[in-house]
Image (cartoon, rainbow, N blue to C red; front, top):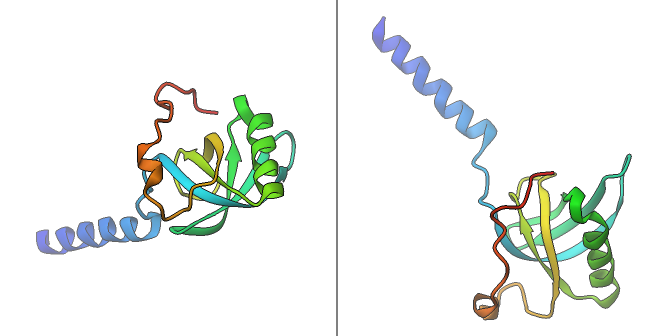
Length: 124
């Protein structure tokens, strides 16, 4: 009986890992803005593409949603990339900060740029 239980526990744990996946870490990502605008209510949605994901929707942090929307629209108009701080790369995660950039997504030049720490920002 103990072997069966142990087997079921292992199967359950592995299944949870497969179905829920591993969340990507919060951090800075260089992305292309595909679409941006208001959704239902007062929520601002931004569709971003990166080498690790494509056409994924994110939510602008409520404290900075006007600034994030303006930056996203300006990046689309100027055909430039943005450097965003994402809480996670999972769909519908929050965008905490966004900057326009002329650096390429694959370039290493961004390693030399000092961006502000996003450690004490309140969660939306």
